[in-house]
Image (tube, rainbow, N blue to C red; front, side, top):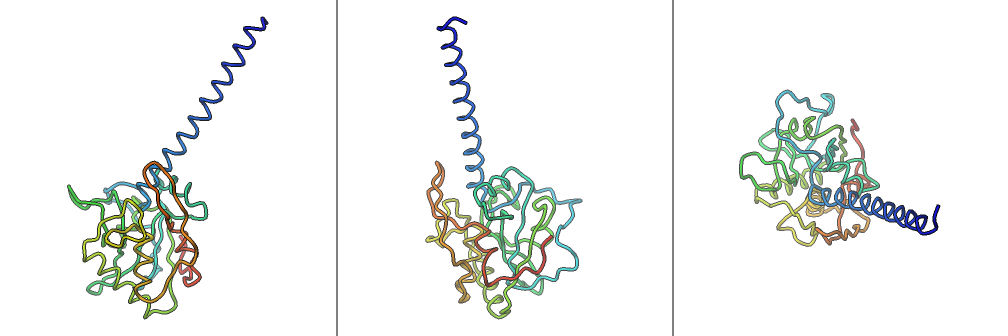
Length: 229
């Protein structure tokens, strides 16, 4: 092969390799960007009819239980790409309202009606753990039921205040909250800090913040697994 042609071929192959590498990186960062936007959720969708609840019937939830879920969508996989120690992409807290157990959680992308904003929500257990939103989940519990109940009351008060979802993931701004922030806030106000580790710094085009992932709560020394399903 002519030397000039060989050099041209080598140059072309180098360009192809660089483009392929850049494409891989771009895809990865796009996934991460989606994760940041959707950190508070597991998977999208609003059609619950005919969908099963993945929470086993044998599990009896209590006020203050911390509930985790993982969906099957792109957002969930992207969240786990960020949260390398985690198995779940979303977390909420069980509350008792008018004698009925429900779940308070801060979540984007799950409107209850047209024009609904991203906010802290109060959802039935069947909806939170619907197979639309959850492939699997876990329930963790604090042994101190009095503190757990106080935390659930704080979470319910957050919902009643109409707190919006925190798309900036700013732990210092409690006027808006994301999922992990809301659970940690509820327990902190009840007198117990669940998370002992430092937040992870996220530096992305959409977000520059110190973030706590669901795994930060899941690995709390104060919580014990009740059910993993």
